Image 1 (tube, rainbow, N blue to C red):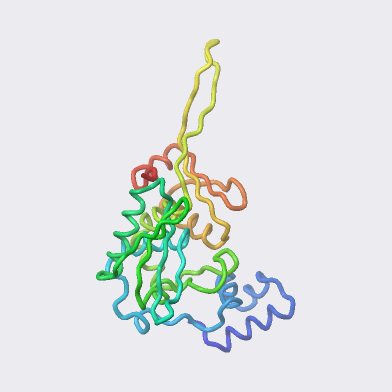
Image 2 (cartoon, rainbow, N blue to C red):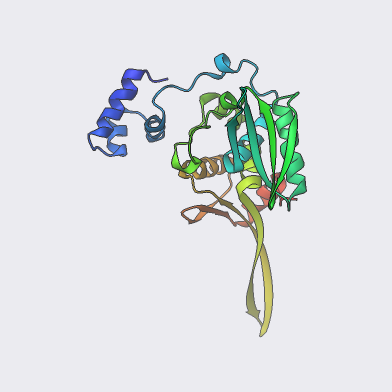
Length: 247
C-alpha cells in the first residue's frame, strides 16, 4: 500500500499538467491507482479492520459484486446503516430470486425486500457493513468515478471469476441470437448464431469484465465504446456452460 506522501506527490505531478502515462512511468504507480487517487486520496480501509466478518460466501459475493457494479447502489439509512439495492427487470423472475439468494448468502440474517417499480423491481437488504463490503460505493454515477477492486476483492474474483462474469452479464449483459443468409447451390439458407453482449459506460468496469474474460480464455471484441461482444463459437460455448441466457 502506498503512503500518503507518495499519493500526494504523484497527484502533484498530475496537477502540473503531466499526462497520466508520464506520471505512471516516472513514479512506477499504475494508471489505475492514480485514477483512483484523483477521486479518493485516502487509502480504503482494510476489510479485516472495518468488516471483520466479511462475506459469508465468497462465491455468492463475486456474483453479487457483478450485480452491484452493473445495476446496484448503496444508500444510507437516516437512523444508521445502509441499504444495498439491485435493480432487476420484471422480465427475469429467475434473476430476482438469484439476487435475493446472493444477498442472504453474503450476509446471513439480512432481511431482503422486493419493491416493485415501473418495469423493474428493487431487491434490497439492510446492513451496516455494505460500504466496507463494496468499497466502490461513492458519490455520483459509477462511470464518473474510478472503479478499482480492493486487494481482498481481487483475491475473491481470482477464486471465483465465472461468478463475477455471471453477475456482470446478468446485470448489464444479454445473450442474443443473430442470423444471416447464404446462398448455397442456388438455395438461400438462413443461419443463426448466438453471441453475448456486455454494455456499460464505465471504462473501469468494462476493463474488469474483459480482463476476467482474458483469464478464462474467452475471446471478445469491442463493438463500440460501451459494448463488449463475445461471438466466437468456442467462447460462446464456454459462456453457455457457465452463464447461459437470463430467465
